[in-house]
Length: 336
Image (cartoon, rainbow, N blue to C red; front, side, top):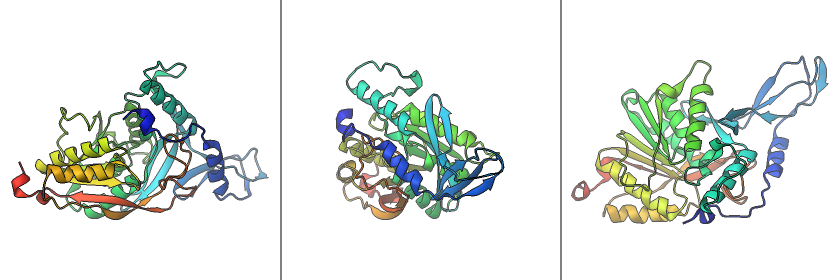
């Protein structure tokens, strides 16, 4: 499938209207300030404002805490993860999403991207990893609740890490090593920045997190060794669903636990189940409902359609399909 197939929807975006609606929903109140920046949270998202002058009454106008990562303008997003607490990641702003979508379309048409900095070029034409998706919160919470092994001795591998919520949560939780992979370098750079600078004044998680480019569809490249292999919202089309099944089987047969999360409506999920059952006849594998969180903030309509269940004006609970497989689920006759 081409990127034109993957990036469905209208070219006309309502990002500015969506952003205005979100900001207007955030609580504000008049207060007397003294020129110092103040911050408060709304549904887990950090908001900042500053008085226009000393000792005057103002009605604060909330904005996002912004960062520039290699010419990619990003906003902070903070998500509460069970037993870990707030985890802060970065996602591209509306303007940067626009540039990334243009780069994806140009790459699909084999055109030269004109006018954008080289950092905003895409490797394979996938802008989805520049924003957060609901299954990441569900997988993160599931790992924190269910994984009672000694994390300090274990390696966790994430496929299609995107903005890195699962990887960063695992590093904070104490996994010995976290290998975060993606086939685009843009989300890996956002993850590296978040891990180094945004999760505690004295915390640099880069000593525990290793980033690496990996295309799950390239079966000639084996998965890195890991005790646990996780993936959240990577089955956007049947092709990646089938590839995820192959990678899950690869991990299970070498003795790794596999955890997969998938938000509602992903076209690759049926293909994943069909391929998994074909690769391992008789495997006992099914998706269960797990609580995730919808995502808020601007989304380019070619990245996420306006009617998608994955987004909402304010974050709210969303049931996400989750599968947790252990190596012993593979029938003995299929273990080799």
